[in-house]
Image 1 (cartoon, rainbow, N blue to C red):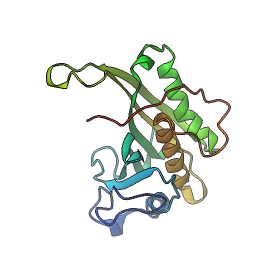
Image 2 (cartoon, rainbow, N blue to C red; image 1 turned 180 degrees about the horizontal axis):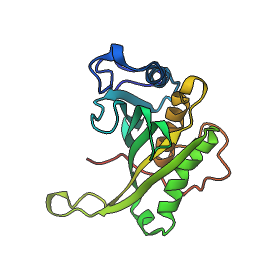
Image 3 (tube, rainbow, N blue to C red; image 1 turned 90 degrees about the vertical axis):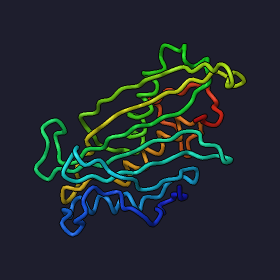
Image 4 (cartoon, rainbow, N blue to C red; image 1 turned 60 degrees about the vertical axis):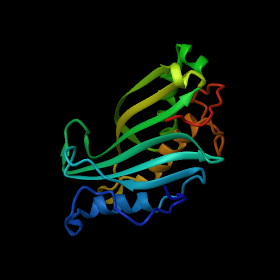
Length: 216
């Protein structure tokens, strides 16, 4: 992946429409905001192939949090747009995400872990003053124990957040997609165990964990 900080690699533009000239101006503006966002230096981000069946227009990104050449967390963010609106979204835009990271094994037993991880998502959005609605999702934790030729590996616990939310639209019917991307990167960095770059949000609960590199 190419280092982010507002810079995206040259390659597939991440859209699901081959006819880019027909893209609605509101969607194009939202995509431009994603591509010009200023992000933390630990983020590596690239456009990726967007889904074709979720909405008439879609743009997708994949990202990883990298520190000292270690991949600490990764995820995928998809911006959907339906100019006709969508009843379930209560709007014309929708953001869909998958975020994954590995925790220390003892964290799996914490009964508050799912609630805390969900608070990281909502807290990231609230921490940047973003207005959103219709948020929904799941938090899944799974433990792995290794045997045979892999028995030297330590047990691992993976946390996975799948979520979607409707970004409230501003002037011209365009949401602040760049700010939502920055909030999503805040979530990735928090689940990776990195300290916040600004004052932590008072409504977000932290867990005292430190993860090593992800194993694949």
